[in-house]
Amino acid sequence: MHIEYDHENDVAYVSLVAHIADGTAVRQFTLDSPGGADLNLDFDEAGRLLGIEVVGARAGLPEELLRQASRTDG
Image 1: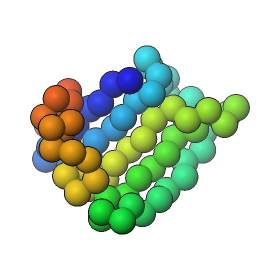
Image 2 (image 1 turned 90 degrees about the horizontal axis):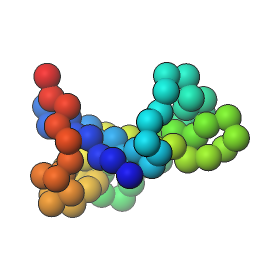
Image 3 (image 1 turned 90 degrees about the vertical axis):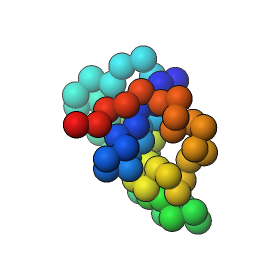
Image 4 (image 1 turned 45 degrees about the vertical axis):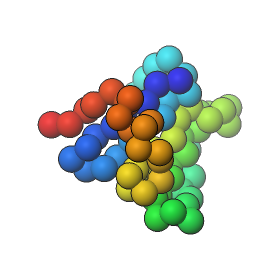
C-alpha cells in the first residue's frame, strides 16, 4: 500500500497495488463520506479494487497519515 498526497489540492490517493498502469482502472465508484470527503474507488476489469482517491483528504483521513504520505504538490 502506498499513499500520495497533494496538499495544494487536498487530494490523497491510497494505492493498494504496487503500480497502476494507465488504463488499468476501468471502473470508478464514487461515495460521499460522512466526514465531508469524496471517495473515488478505482477497480480493474476483473472487479479488483486498485486504489482510493480521497478528495477533501483533510476531512476524510487522519492528519498523521497525511503527514507520512508522499507529497505530489506542484
